[in-house]
Image 1 (cartoon, one colour):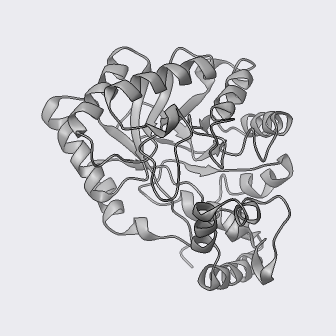
Image 2 (image 1 turned 180 degrees about the horizontal axis):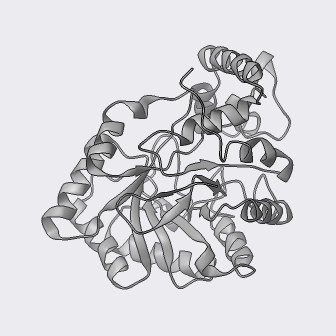
Amino acid sequence: MKRNRLGRSGIVVSEICMGTMTFGSMADEKAAIEILDRSFEAGIDFYDTAENYPVPPDPKYAGRTEEILGRWMKSKPRDALIIATKVSGPSHGWIKAAVRSGMTTLDRHNIVRAVEASLTKLQTDYIDLYQTHWPDHGARYEETLEALDDLVRDGKVRVLGCSNETTWGLTKSLAVSQANGFARYETIQNNFSLNNRRFEDELAQACRQEQVSLIPYSPLGGGVLSGKYNDGAEPQGSRFTNYKSAGSRQAAMVKRFINDKTLASTARFKAIAEEAGMSVVTLATAWSKQHDFVASTIVGATRAAQLPEIFAAADLTLSAE
């Protein structure tokens, strides 16, 4: 499996990263461990989680995913793993923070509390990549980045990243880090798939010029690009089937991911994949990881049977045609 560097950092990761956001909810611990073991055996060394997982966020079980990952990590050499997690930013229209009673401003107090809790749950003394889960444009970037820089200097964190950030937020943070001598964001984790290509505009150019690596999540468009929602299907137990009755926030997210345009595009991509002799899951995963500004693509699974089609993209490079 090929590997790429995270930004300008010394960390080199596999081109596929295993995401864990359903571990402890849609995937129980037994299923999660099997997925993690199969991923490690396939050559994946990069694993992404967050203090707010699993999804949908709920204070009753927030942090369960980090705990599952932490127990699994004890069975593997720590130096063989690249572990990423995230500190929650302020709640917004799509995601509500399930930690600290929703009080998740990106100030020093919350960042320190979050990292200490994550280190405990993960049963490790350092985090390889620590990311802000979503931005806090109302906070002072100087305070946020100074607190994160202290974590790097203390050896609790190796590399910093952001997630769900805008072009302004990314470039603002880089300027603050440069002006103050703080560790900077080496990565950005945003939504990017065949069905959501917004990143290809200003953000892609900012990443190229500033040498920041994208770690795209949801390369299958929330599972839509697998084709499982086409023709009006509502697969039992699937994320967006569950979200339809989970509340207004989640129902709005369903419409964002599943609509006439995304379903029509998925049908076309499926036909292209079949003509090329691969599954649409393999096609979409391979497409996501082979951009010049991408270091590693975050994939997700709720059962091990989903992995072969994902892993088939590991060493695959799609032709321009």
